[in-house]
Image 1: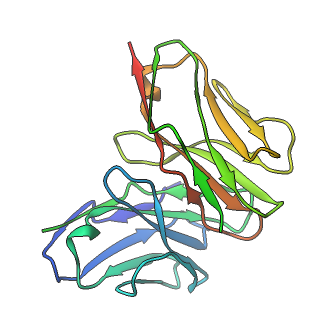
Image 2: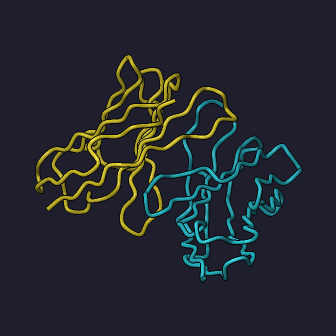
Length: 113
Length: 115
């Protein structure tokens, strides 16, 4: 069974540009979560999508947005990139079974220069 | 809002010894789950162990066990017979017990294994 896959692995952008990160959940998982992990810090919750709808949002500005497609894959878009957006972005997926943990992808390392 | 606190930014242990990582949390919910995740240099977050709040028995997974003190809102991880492969960042996480809720993470503890 394929795990959570994220692309690209690394992404370098210039300040002010837009970045698009992609995530494919484990087959059968309907929920996708996005987290930001800045260097040396813990995971900060960004967004949660389930069944195509945004269910919850962390304390991030509106230039962080995303969507979930009918096949449950997801995109995270970051507009007007700032230097402090440089971080590892982790995607996780889970199923509706409340006892199931979230499975994580290997992340996208975004560097803003 | 739920919060998770890990007060030990770094810990080290001799190979084959035992180490305990601390975690406290704050919640007003009665139904929830607690997790320990491991993040090695490869960046992949790996689930180490899970505890359901309604279970009084502490969870164990081979060399990994937890000390879950619900009244104190404490959830520590004990690693026995530490191995070099245990070196990683360890994150404590909380999740409400219904639906497909998000995880709330602590800031992590970096564990170093001394050969």
